[in-house]
Every structure is written in C-alpha cells, then in structure tokens.
Image (cartoon, rainbow, N blue to C red; front, side):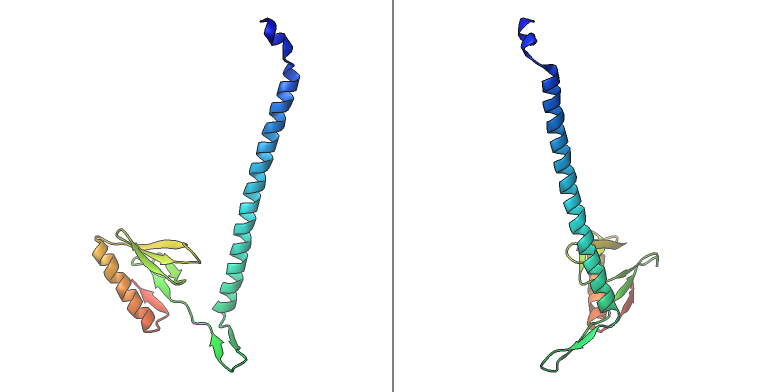
Length: 138
C-alpha cells in the first residue's frame, strides 16, 4: 500500500481526460470530413443530373454538337419501383441490379427464381437500350 501514496490521482484523471478528449475530437473531425466529402459529391452529382436531365446541349469549337441522351427508366415487375438507369446493370445471384448513380450505387429492382432468368432479363434490357428506348417495364 505504501507505493500507492506516490500517485497523484488528480494528475492521472487529468491525463486520461485529456487523452479521451483528443480521441473524441479526432473521431469527430474524421466523421465531419467524411460527411463533407459525401455531401459535396452528392451536390455535384445532383447538379450534373439536373443539367444533363434537362437536355443539355453545346457546340464544340470544331462545330460538333454534343447533347445528352435521356436515361432509360426501368419499372420493376410489380410496378412498385421506377429507377433511372445511370449506366450499368448487373446480376447479383438471382437479382437484377440497376446502377442508379456513379461508382457502385446499385439498387435491386427484381428477384428471379434462377440466375439464368435474371441474366435473360438483363439481355432484354440491354436490347431495349440499344434500340433507344427511354422506358422499359420488367
């Protein structure tokens, strides 16, 4: 017990408190930075979607006309979902996944009994895209 008399409990508690405060501040800063990056990215994406969704058109210096193409809308089999096809489709197990934003933003639009059925549906959607359709019902 004699060795415990050398410790100043107030000093130890102050040091622990300071370390906990530093850890919490670091965590809050990391979280805030992450949220800010996500928020700015979403704002930029929304602005681009609004710009391109409203028929953006411009002419390059060489006279080439550049205009946006309307994105295909895909309706789920039960008509409970309508998603804008951002650019990709994929089969995940027995589900058809639709890319709804940049990167890996995919949403499930339909489940099928087999993987082959899902793949066949993906092929049908691809053919509709190639044909220039802007609306497709599963």
